[in-house]
Amino acid sequence: MKKNRNIIFTLFLLCVLAPFSAVNGQGFHWAELGRDLGPAAKLVGDIELLLVFISTPEHPWSEEEITDFFNIVHTSKDFILDEADRYGVPLSLSAQYFEASIPYEFDGSDLNNIDLSWYWYLVKNYFHTDGMTSMHEAYEERFGKDNTPFLFVFNNSYRNITYSTNLLHPNWQEEFSIYYGQQLMRDNMIVHELMHQYGAVDLYDLGSEGVEEISEQIFPDSVMLRQEGTEIDELTAYLIGWIDDSSELSDDTLFFLTLTDGLRESLETDEYDYSDIDEYPDNYNSYNIYDDYTDFSTGEFSDLLFDLNDFDMYEIY
Image 1: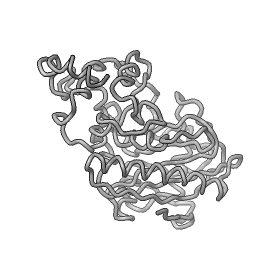
Image 2 (image 1 turned 90 degrees about the vertical axis):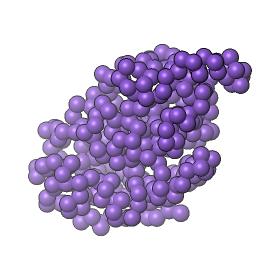
Image 3 (image 1 turned 45 degrees about the vertical axis):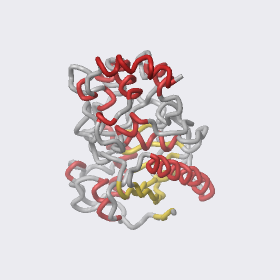
Image 4 (image 1 turned 60 degrees about the horizontal axis):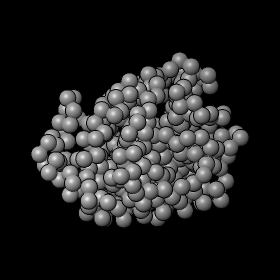
């Protein structure tokens, strides 16, 4: 089917397709909004995946549950390495995990009412180091890695989500994913969220019709179309830095980009309300732990409640 479509549209593609960077009048396609931006710009080099298992009063983690979860992490890591090898990309990927806790329950069910109080709590009490300008930079230096993506895992069940830098929110520099360990597990759910940190986009509909239908035809096995997908598609490979230039993209991918250009105009007005995430909201003071907060982006914290070494760290091979 794919070969037949290529034959039919090859002449069309060669004659009328503009370069990817000029698919629309803004000079970029909606899929490019997060490419090469933020701490997790490219998934290349020596990468250390840092998982934080967060216990809450009603949803603590047991060692058995953590071990079971890491069986899936290992599978995801191997999948990514195999795909990087298929694209000829130099990638070393290992993982470490931390155990941490917050003194209250976190309700992640309302994605339109973003509450990051738990995140600031963990940063201040577990992950801050003197003089750091970002959490990523601090841990890159600590472990001697090119990049240290964070995955925070709660022991309950809501919808996974990733916060990443893009052209709509260029001031948000702390990229991370939130994962819920008690939901129904699919083969590459962790891979799906990690790809988002590096600029990948969902290939299913997000408030706009047509994207998923086209993706089913061109990228039917992509992990960004469905979380049990079996491959990292070419568009995703381009967005995460595995393909350097849009001129290297195949006719199939260019065809997808042409057909979907403009289909996600709704994303330009925010799918979620990010109005507070790069500011310090007053209502996060309910636990009286941020009274001396100044500005996370400059690393200006004081009076840490816990020493940085007061939590367990495990290295996974």
